[in-house]
Length: 572
Image (cartoon, rainbow, N blue to C red):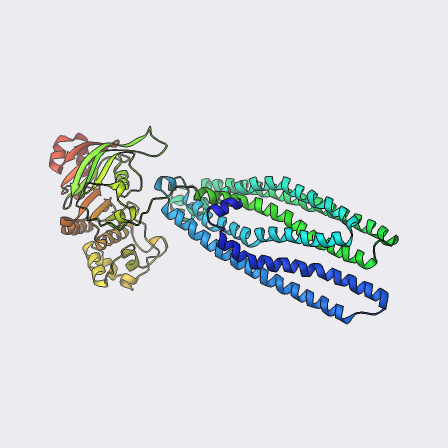
């Protein structure tokens, strides 16, 4: 476990260095704690001999108690501070990992589960770093320090303790393995609960409209029942630990007291030494129990750690920092075929061949599942091309750094997610250039959104609300198109950009695109005839294959399925 923490740079040389001071303070605190019973021994022995108290010894005990408390406060603060810093860095690493995961890997995760890893699982690491590991180290040091003092006081009495320590650790070891399994299953179920809670809150209207509240409640109850079952299993194990340990500790103390009284009776041990020994026995019980409990805690945290380690093991996109200049004027697909990793038998795109240059617009048309959006994903390098080549200005797309490529692409997806922020901040999101309010308003006018904007009290500074609740679907879509106009990217990928707008807005959007198309490479996925009919070329896709290429009239006369699509729209 520690090796993996070091491997992923969660714990490094710098971390170990900053741990030294608080660990030293805790060790020193154990030393002062150990001295207190010894001074009590001196007081008792002094009173027995001199029949009076020693003020100096009392002052020393008070000093040691104050020092002990001070060291506890400082070390506890430092350890928690270190834990907070480490978890901050860990959460940054997890966030960076999630943001750069390859898309086919990201698709395997439930989004709420990733959120659970970022929040709950990393919180478990905080407990590990700030509590468990320091307690493990200090407990071992405490057992060693107090153990040495106990052996020096009485080797005979220490035999009882030598038997106790391995017994306690054996119990925790046996039960700890079960706790680790329960912990991993619990973290997975918490991830499922997180996913379900996100679904029922964000899709509440959809659920009610379909009258499926009962179904969703049953799904939630199933997860909660699993969590309850796991919680009961954990409670049983924890319930076993306390009484078993209590019996062992009781027998240990009984052994020490009985044998100690015997040693006092035969003048082998003084009363002061016995009292000091008993005090130290109770003191050593704390690190012994802490050592066992810490072992159990680490096993319990192991489930969260495994999920983080599994995430760190995943491959990320190769974001090179090569500052090459890319001014794309053409894109060519050469015999491109695509299938998802581990699904080679399921061909999504097959032998795709075409080229496009600046000033041209290609409309991709075809039934759902034909591979249109996947083609966009390949241009964006969300997925690698397993067969064939995609060339940008005769340069293989694999040789173009992802960050450089995507700076040159403006992409409007079907879902057009928006930030819970102002209209202005949504429009300039991801744009590296400085954009004036005048330019923003001009783009808003281009997509027929200006009259809607005037209804908002704060104009472009209006907050669109959580999940953009203050905007209609059509307004959201036009906002995304305005954003693309402001980006000035040479390549535009437009996926169903007019699906949620009225005829007037669609006309305005088409006009806006016509104004800028002379210096753009434009791909659009659309089903509306009014959107695609003026494209330079229409590519018809069926089951991942190109079955027709041409202008609207040409394709209408030669391609039966395209003609059927058009006729259906005209009838409607």
